[in-house]
Image (cartoon, rainbow over all chains, first blue to last red; front, top):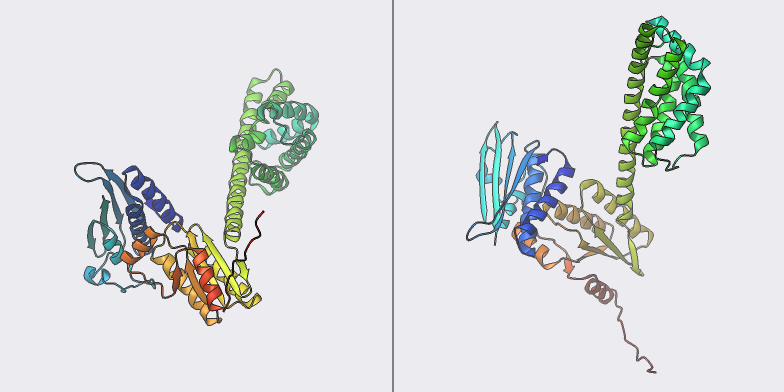
Length: 126
Length: 286
């Protein structure tokens, strides 16, 4: 799915919720992955200058859940350590989106090359 | 070429009534007789457009954007706009212009019964100009639909952010749906205005209807609460569901404000703070 404008963030949330329900996640896990998706989608839009998200469900043994991959070709993150620190922001937010999203997921991977873009993969399973 | 368009203009004005009759019939058939537009109105639209079209052609216009077609385009714009608002489909709207081709072509053929080359060249001119006008109709249609959507968005934003007076000096703000920046602005304005109007000391912000509370929503809430505080009103947040509470804790968001699970609890707290008690009276049985 593309993330180009703020309405897309809402669409991503709705799509993730549908997939989370399909994967059989409970209400709390659904809420967590949807919230994390909301944070990362908005980051992709605001800092990555737009990008895409891929939503997949996996039902393999022994886990069932949802995996999301956010990609953008924006400026990239120069200092990942710092970006993942609570309360650090360059954009006037609370500075909790990225670090909070990491805490909301079972799996969190981030790759970023300055000048080329950022890819974040998260997953939540039960 | 010029002479072709002049000839078209002549045919249109001389045989107007035949064209209108045929055209109208086609339009009625195309709309499946749903009767959403009155017959008389369709006829008037047909007549007005034809005369403006003939006038434009007569004035030497050869493309739809020519100033000589201004009045024809304006008429089409009006037709398109009203149809968009009445919920016509794009096909139904475009049909208005495109269905003029058949009656017009028929009259061209009748005017030059023995000159096929002439009929073909006039037919081509006519098709080109009507296609351009048809595209213009679609553009206006699209714009009108976008206007409708925008208006509905505004209405939704207005509707979904009422400020309710619960008691003397106690307001409730039941939030429903997505809290994007534009809506938060409306929420904040409504709440602050209501605080002034009702000279309220307490505002209960109920988020039962907010599906996702992420850091942006939390930040908007905190700003609203801070603004209310500056105006001398305290806020209580209610309606935080268990899954939202867990998520907020993991996110690391702290709402520096009193919160209650339900609106009822929040109201009870508000009564307590303003020195009121609720007493159950014995109800006479029978």
